[in-house]
Amino acid sequence: MEKDEIRIIVVEDESDIRTLILHHLSKDGYSAIGAVDGEDGLKKAENDCPHLMVLDLMLPGMDGMAVCRKLRQNPVTKNLPVLMLTARGEEEDMVSGLEAGADDYVVKPFSNRVLLARIRSLLRRSGVFAEDGHDSKSMTVGEITLVPERREVTVNGKAVDLTTGEYKTLHVLMRRPGVVFTRNQLLDLVRGTLHAVTDRAVDVQVVGLRRKLGKAGSKIETVRGAGYRIATR
Image 1: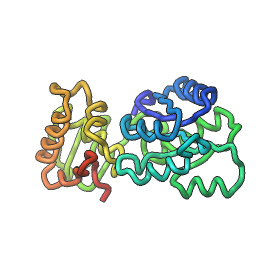
Image 2 (image 1 turned 45 degrees about the vertical axis):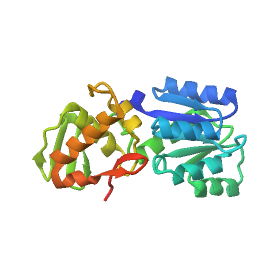
Image 3 (image 1 turned 180 degrees about the vertical axis):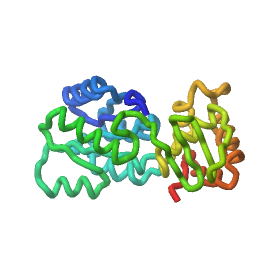
Image 4 (image 1 turned 90 degrees about the vertical axis):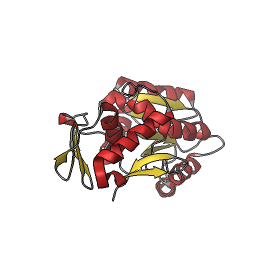
């Protein structure tokens, strides 16, 4: 995946800090989105399909702990990597943040180099960001293997001929196994490959994929009321 395709949400109520973080993320090549409070962050996390959230612990209203717990309860966002920012250095607060669902934390004040390094580390751990910044490694889920460099999909070693829309839909799902994508999110990610840009167009891609993948098509699961995901098992 190209770096500018990686979307990061920054949930920070202090405008100066939020603006500074967004500036450095954009300067480093990421697509950065700001959120002013917990509710705004949750809404954007569900609608914008981010790859990582930078989340301040001390937010007005719903604090970072509550935001983390809600992220983990929502099938669309439960696997979203979260880097928590805290002005507190006490071990108890750090542990509480991790137990609430954060994947890592940075204590304020922090250097931008440290923040960016922690973000890169989390993206690598989540499988979004390869060392070279490109999503070029082959991916395998069950009997399905996808090789981005060759735009090749095989099932049990046998090549499967997919349309561009079907391939991109499968690629999006396989990049993040187990993550639920809404129809709107999939539509945004594969936009430009579908002639009819509607929710129904996504359903058509999924139906075509399942048919062409045969029995392996059952790996693409419908999550009622949410969207689609590719099974991890």
